[in-house]
Image 1: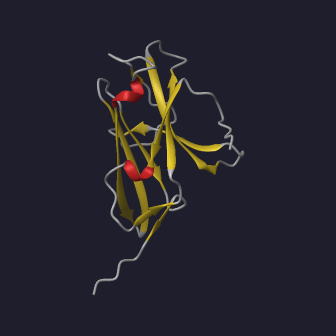
Image 2: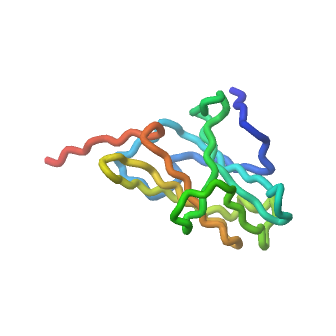
Length: 143
């Protein structure tokens, strides 16, 4: 199956959801793979941004669902891209230094998944929030 993205990336890496740590056993994702996509900055030489793409879902325009990573350490929503310097990396080596974890959170009765990504050798510490469109929570009954 061919997937259409809203724009071309400069590099990407495919992940299987069952290989990422941090989730309780009662969370079942509605997809099995996702991609971390990287984009060279158009504004600043030597900088990049990143997104999480989930080919099993489409956005409102029919493209693969994709969400840009936001700065994990910045508490307010930003309307500009979260870009950091490559430092010791380049576009070809950046995907080899990813550390990605998931965490389930619940606020005001609604659950969501926080996908947190660190990239060793850079100051990148980003996150993406996934709402319940992307997962199911099984109710565990204690005996």
